[in-house]
Image (cartoon, rainbow, N blue to C red; front, side):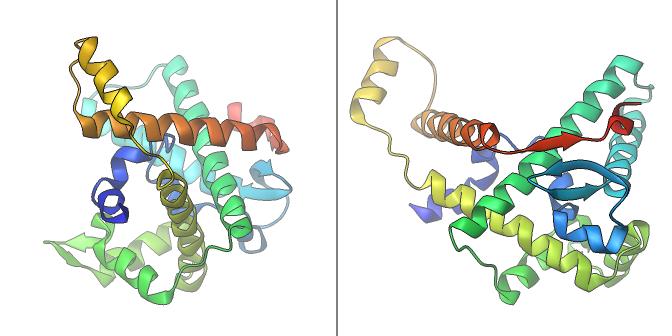
Length: 217
């Protein structure tokens, strides 16, 4: 079953709103970026405002470059909301991963970095692109890699939770009777998504989240 999840890992992470966001945000960065400027606090852990702005500016720039048009004020507001929710989600999953005693090895981290398209040049890991990325963040490799380990821990928790889901025959039969055009895989992923979202919403209810008003200005 875990092989299935590794193969379809993107499909089951529906509540990850901005894929890029997760690789650079966690409360531990507060010591590096400072304790006063934050975008949001989740259970007392600060997500630095600088990180939020970096992600936001890149998101807007990427859209405008791809579309050839500028975002409206309402669209920019939606981008801000999506990024903030993604920041919260990544921190929540990391905090919860610690409760499950989930850890990430150096080997897992190295594999993640080597396979990241963001750091590849002609299909091969590029140290130059990696260093350029770190310079853009103003972060040393050790800080970044520590944060990346935390995000991977959150992903591993999602996989652990998803592994508890089973697709029953009566569910498959019900879909067939209603003539709904979907595959078993799509139905399975949909069930996982529902479970993850329900789990996440329950955790959110028991979490203390404080956003900085400056984020929405």
